[in-house]
Image (tube, rainbow, N blue to C red; front, top):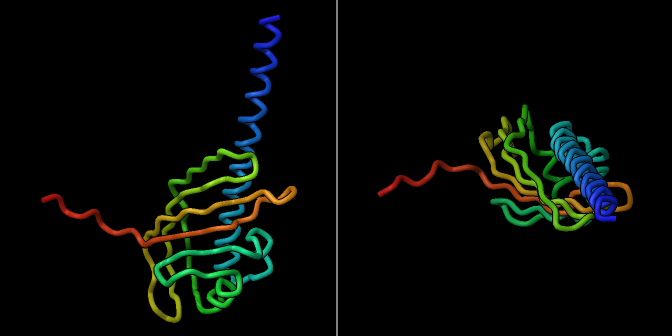
Amino acid sequence: MKTYLTYVLSILFAAIATSFADDKATVMANEKAAWQAYKDKNATEFQKVVDKDIRVVGAEGVSNMQKELDDMKVWDIKSFTISNWDAFTDEPDVIVATYDITLQATANGKDISGNYHCGSVWKKEGANWLGIFHSSVKAEAPAAAK
């Protein structure tokens, strides 16, 4: 009986780990898709992976979906590279992701290129993972030790 229970628990934990790995991969793909849609100024594709009630926090303040769609029109992203991707969950329908992004971009003609630290929260709605929160901050050089 103990052996049977051990096998059942092992299979259950393996299934959970595999499920999280699949969800994590989906969220990462969706994060890239959101950036690509923003780069392409494709509001329709952006809205497929981002919840209508998204909130975004950045140096300029807090925005919602409409502000993001408006800002998309004045951003010119030449390239982006995502690195240092990580994600975790404590709930089956929420994933918190963190990563760095390197941008070559302008906004309203102003150069905003650089490295940014980002965080996003993704919520599973039915079968789809949608971004519900995003924040980014431009990376700064560490303060010199005194």
